[in-house]
Image (cartoon, rainbow, N blue to C red; front, top):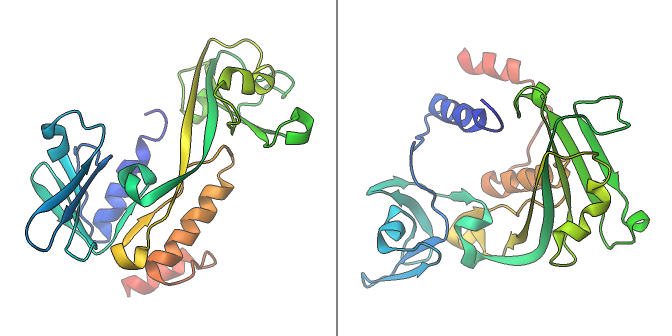
Length: 247
């Protein structure tokens, strides 16, 4: 299986091991929020659903105090004490903080002058480019099971300063050599503006332009502390901890 397909399967299995419930084959719960009012009426915010049927597919539910208590999908409700999600699930609880320009390139070769490496990470400094932000170049290949045999996938990203990703990313793309096919996109970056102590919604920040995941890891660690009230201890010996649990 290519790409990230194994991650949700692994998460589902781990969830079951620890007594969790994983709802399979459910539609996305994006762009929909449901707020239950104290007098029984419902105030609904619906964007990009297209139809009432689409709206009914998946709802994040809140009680009369504005606290999340579950997610309803296709008539089934998963009750919870906390909702953890990315910004697209609760658009009224986040604010825009920037925009990312990205190019996804499919190639039949490694990046030139990289020793035929199947995995490459390059950061182009903003001063060298005459920009306000760095540019990131990442390449992986079929050796990582993310592409068919003989194919390479490269990503070129930066914080967007214009509405022309083709122009902004050219310096990075020029380093790739011949490209079989290229896809451009821009997307907005958001961060939460809600009070998680009130609504019990823990929202991550959007992915930024970096391709080394440092900012993402820091965000996950910060969210862990907010959700559990504890600092994440990565020095724990998991083998010893598992053995102790089994005794």
